[in-house]
Image (tube, rainbow, N blue to C red):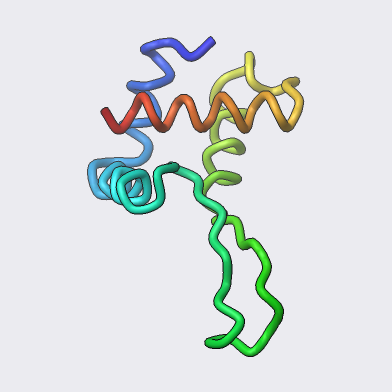
Amino acid sequence: MIEQRHIDSVRKYLGEENLRYFRHLKGLKGDVFPVLKLNYRKKGIPAHPVGLREGMQIRNWMRVNFPEFRELSQNKIERLSEELINKAII
């Protein structure tokens, strides 16, 4: 469902600096939208996963700019947004 026009559009939207950010996340954590775990000893609170808000921003941008993404379930658009960013950072 991800087409070249989606990839070109998200590359333009993000710009090279933000594409580098996602490449860095992919290299560092193996995923463009990693879920991080807070360190209990450093923070003094129970360890729990923390998702980055960049994924939500990309999904919202996709819904606004492409009608075909507006009615998708949350799980489907999450998978497609990850696929889109992975293709955009190549």
